[in-house]
Length: 373
Image (cartoon, rainbow, N blue to C red; front, side, top):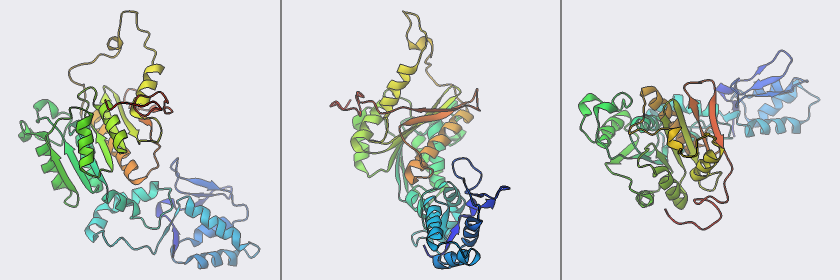
């Protein structure tokens, strides 16, 4: 690192009791450092991007003559490793055009703000996204919002799979489509819109059904995908099929959707935490529906031919899905897999998070041999 500086979004300040706060006041990012002798403040003040590392150390020692050089160096390393410092001298990657730098500048700054991993350049995260290849299953309400967010954010390639045509009843929650699209294959209409949003992203697609885990395995084997994004809820077994196929291929995946006012997204990485089937088994075990002896689950959670939804529930689920996808693709923010998170619109102040351990008896990722169903 040639000319270290505190990230603009992480600019430090001194508290009334003399501590140093750095990293913004956002929970999960900022930190508070005790500074009884004032030299930590001198250090962060010197990290303005105009000095090389040796000059930073000299500037601090000139103000605090009794301070040991190794203490300053150790503190500087701590700030670097905490993700609060970047290299002001780092040039943008040659692969990233000036047009792309202007397009993604605001997003790169947000990544920089949330990123607590040591990196030299603000563009490192964007370059990871630029090289990503994403397979998206389902381009309805949730999938349409997610697709637009991924394309706008600069994912390298997005391939869509969607079997349906646009219907009038879709338009209350699927703004990717217009009245003039009614009767058109959703895949065709989506490709037209998404390609017009960002010519620097390669968007491909097909009108096709997912009829089993074999279909998904074949699609994953056909290209070197970084991530699978599942935004379809039919057939009923599609999440289990996706879980098995991604476990076999070693491909991370996310799924999202809504059930009435409940909006959620699942984050899954083979070999890291509980798989989707583990989470589902834990959810069923934890649930206490107090059903009568002759009643099944449908009595407490009725299933309808279509899912009640509007543009808000679809938009929230699609945005959460895109957020989870971007986090897995870039590592920003760090997101531990093996969980389901979301919110209940009836109680918006109570976020929903479910995290359980991997189950050794899981038929998908457990210790016992499994089939490919």
